[in-house]
Image 1 (cartoon, rainbow, N blue to C red):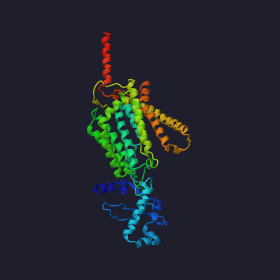
Image 2: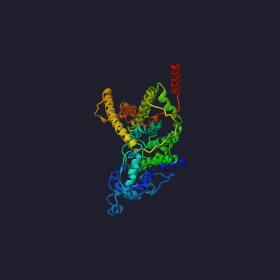
Image 3: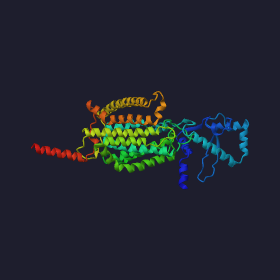
Length: 472
């Protein structure tokens, strides 16, 4: 019973609205926000009332129902009452208090559930610093960040670490999105919550995948690098905590998730990372060295994308999860090919490696790689989207001008998978070759592998020794 009560409190949208108000959002009802609350209330007076504290409390009894002047209302209630009380309000006054509260509660809750997918309140941002800070925090979980962050690590920092982070990120994202469409828990209701973001409003809320990857990405980076590079462990851990908190709080501030959604997503990320981390080395070695890994991994990820739970209504969760699997596929195939062709060199010395402060040469070459590589990726993404979409429309005899084609399973999955697998392949394979040809290759390319010898390396060493002996 206590657990159920705690879950109900953490999932309360009023808790989200209070956090928004605390962070400088002035929230008020739209005039049309409660028009559908009661079909018999045809007068406009109820539309100017703000109803709050109508959710069930822990003991199952009813809380007080407060009627306050709305921020967007034209007149205070006192002036409205002076002009004469409407007939239906006089009837309500004649009811007993308990009956009136229960009636309003049931109708408001039903109305809020109906409008849980879109914003139905007016709001004013009073604290611009927090608004921009939390908008940046939300961006840390969006596609734009992933399309910048992962290429930066592959091209400028450490491919060995980034391949493993992609594995943890991809699987955690897919399972988190799948859980959303299995549980189908709505996002916080509006009103009372102001929703400042529209791109994910059609998705369900529990758990927050932003919170999940806000744990898996920074902490997988931390655990993979703290024995590999010489840096302050305390500072690195603090930065990871700040990253996670910023993303999690941003989802509440923007009104996209309840506290329960965020805590559950973060907890899922912790548990999932603890589970998958011991297997990351084996997974990476398999995708690099196994002769059939491109076929096996591509087939497995395609099957996993088609195994996504069936949607009761279309939303972007299925496409986003397919995109993450496609990125994993492209990285895996490209890494296997680069390793097979000898593009990766093992370091001569074991870690830890010194972290050098970037100089002018490093900054200049990094900027050139990001500019050239980013141009290639943007062109690849645009071209593959157009080619894949028109091929699918031709295959299934669909009209290309119909935007709803991308909501069809037979179009959306191959469209996303092919496009982003090719983009990821270019990140790991094509762009580094281009950098090498024009002389801006990363100077620390040896960090694509670890110094531990594999059976393949032992065989190569033995063949070299045999050839030397035969020569002499």
